[in-house]
Image (cartoon, rainbow over all chains, first blue to last red):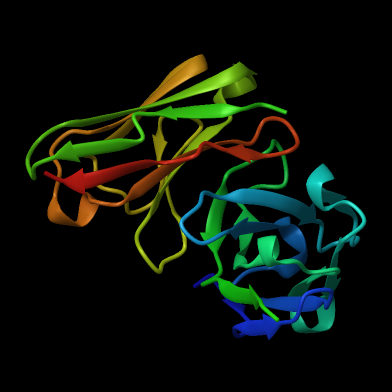
Length: 121
Length: 108
């Protein structure tokens, strides 16, 4: 069965960076795009970007350009999301989510359990 | 960017009642690239509907989606206790992928 297992909660100081991992299993890792979505406390869902695990190409939401980097490690079927220059507004639960098909554009059929990142001095 | 506006913000209903949730897009969504997700407290979102009207695997048939262009609807025919949650629409036809702000379905 498809599973996306994320790394544990993090507490970071303002200005620091965080790197969240998402380990995939139960399917061919390189065949499906992976997205990152975040959710601030009590708020809605915000799309951050997409990575193609096959070639590593990425597209980031404009809001996060320059601060976010998504990478993958094919040997372990893991994708990573690193966010730098953290501020209080980055306190949120970060989710990885698999896109259901490569083409045409598709919905998110599986989600990780979420990783809470807290930014506090 | 396509902005999705969901209404109402909160829907107060009793178990057994019908729920009708709306999602309006600022631009036409091609090929009905619209999905609905359900989220319960402390859980990740769960896919309910994709391509505007197709139910995801394992989703009960009391959930149905409809609409095209800029206006989409999620209907829950008879609310079960486990259906009280927050529902989000999402468009995936154009980048950036965007979500609505959510509709909370609460017990009246």
